[in-house]
Each structure stands twice: as structure tokens, then as C-alpha cells.
Length: 222
Image 1: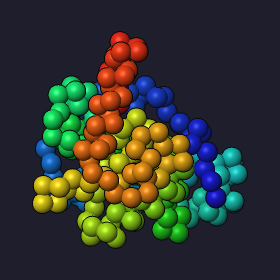
Image 2: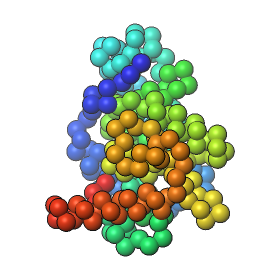
Image 3: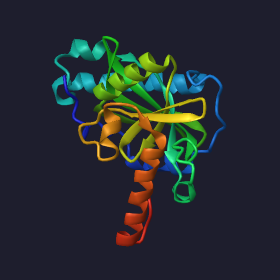
Image 4: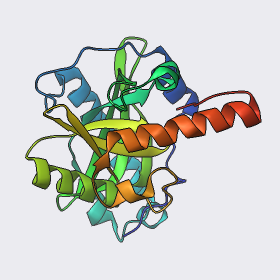
């Protein structure tokens, strides 16, 4: 079953933009698997809405039948981080986490038979958590999460770079990243299949930032 990544943008993209650029930055949590109750409730409400929309035309959204839609369960949620352009420009350490800000935006999945099938984004809009975007094929993302957990025995920290997600593992001052296997990956394609040093990814982002500044007069934009 394949879900078209270009469909299911239920709410205005402006909501996502507001969430990204106005979301407050938070300190690191010791328990990264802990999702605040209000975020969890918003995700559950979002899943119910998602299922109601999918059920109207399952085939349109990549499902075989209405039963598959009804059987969708809420997957794990992770708070996202976004790369800070100024931090990227000044960075000398090669740490993806070091150049990223954690924001009040959470990535969930809608799972079928325990496997992620579609994305769902929850964000803080005017002080209230809401599911603001649905859709996209989360199959490879789910596989990457499973690989990460199997190899590290812990949950990842997730940094979104453009439309791509990188799972970060930091241990003994060494930072490595694993991509999520997107077939359209344009950044660090090798990271989509194996762990690579975080510094390698940061270097590529800096090179792209410099190139954008030269060609378009602007730097990196997440």
C-alpha cells in the first residue's frame, strides 16, 4: 500500500508556517519518549479526523478498503527540531543537534498493523495543540525508526531538514545520523541507508547554504 505524498494537506499550509516560525524553543527533556498529555490528546483527535476523511474514499488515500482505515492506530510521537540558519553558518563543531532548535511541533504516524503508513503533524497554534497536517508515505520513515531503535536501544532525536528527516544518536560525545530512506532524498543519500557522522551532514548543509547565498542571495532555509 502506497500513500501519495502530495495529498492530504487537510488544513492550510499557513498553519504549519505559523507553527514553525512562532513556536517557542524548549530545553531538552531527559525522557524523550514522553509526550505531553495535551499533545497526545490532540494527536488522538487528529487521528479520528484523519480516519473520517480517509473512509470517504480509501483508494484515493492509498488504502485497499475501509476496514484498513478503521484499523489505523496512533503511532509514536516525537518532538521535532529545525536547523537554525545562523547557527549553521557559524558552526565549527559539526553537530546537527548543536545547530538545531527544538520547537513545539510533534511528528506522529498513523499505523496499520503496527507499521507507520501516514504522517500527522501536531503543533501549538495560539496556545492550543492541533493536528495541522496529514499525509505522505511514512513507510520508510517507520523502518528507519525501527532500525535506529534496534541499533541504539533508545528513541531518536529527530531533525527536519527541508522535507527530510534525520534521526540523531549522540553517545560519548559522538554524534551520528540516520536518514529515513526517502526515495526523493536530496541531502546525504548515504545517510538514508546507514549511520553517518553528523559532521558530514552539517558540512553538506553549509556548502548548500553558501551556494544558495551566492546564487540567490539567501542562505539555508528549513
